[in-house]
Length: 295
Ligand SMILES: NC(=O)c1ccc[n+]([C@@H]2O[C@H](COP(=O)([O-])OP(=O)(O)OC[C@H]3O[C@@H](n4cnc5c(N)ncnc54)[C@H](OP(=O)(O)O)[C@@H]3O)[C@@H](O)[C@H]2O)c1
Image 1 (cartoon, protein in one colour):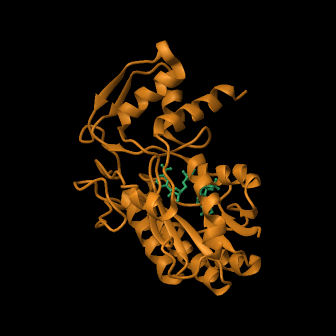
Image 2: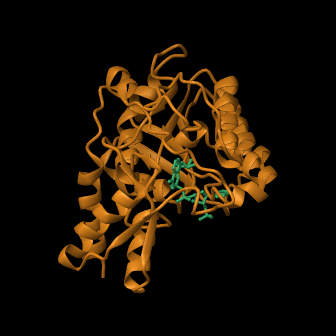
């Protein structure tokens, strides 16, 4: 049976990848961008769910500017927590399941990584706190909600670390990158593929199904931001890769505090979904290949 999906967010990394891959799955997607559904208006977003009566809602829109969120607390909570909660409630009323996307920044990264889904959360900043509130809001509003925590999302498009590093290197500026924060880079395409492949099962699963709740999805492996930058340059520029000096979180001051090691355990993904994500280096290879083939 074709799954009717209502997708919030069309222009972000995940939103674009969902739309690109949807034709390969048995789904019919209606996607609403900011112009059709602005998540600063949770009631309007909920009304869209009631009007479309989907089988599954996928929330791919979010306030993702980690530093800006520190000075936009109300906006971040409206978009990342109130709107997902309202959407999930409206979905419950029409019998739809919900996929919400969250972050490894719900953890403080101060020890204990890799973190399992039930590990204690302690976000260091507004962004992580708003996403954690979003997880709780969707779970409270809809027993058929899944929050997928992901990390370090990258793709050939949009705003992400790969594109930023290549732009900075092309400008010829010296490179200094934080070497004491580590995590798991995640391909937006891999995450989109996971969501779409689970859509039929999630749309059909009853409340209480073990797939609902919280699950971690990231590419396998772990690296520091500096190590990631070096791998990006090696893949994209080969022998012309620039040197990348190391800096520390203490030296590189940003408005938002970031966890040192919020690396997520991926065991539940394998146990409850039968999915083993590929290594981040393989995902990086595909992204760089696509960037190189772009006109
Ligand atoms: N990027 C990461 O490294 C990362 C890490 C962990 C978790 N995540 C989570 O993964 C998910 C996908 O992230 P992403 O990287 O694909 O995000 P992204 O590329 O930053 O895109 C954000 C999307 O949200 C939309 N949006 C923002 N404010 C909105 C509003 N008020 N109303 C409607 N739409 C709005 C944007 O639309 P406009 O184009 O109109 O602005 C855009 O489509 C998010 O839930 C994010 O929190 C991301």
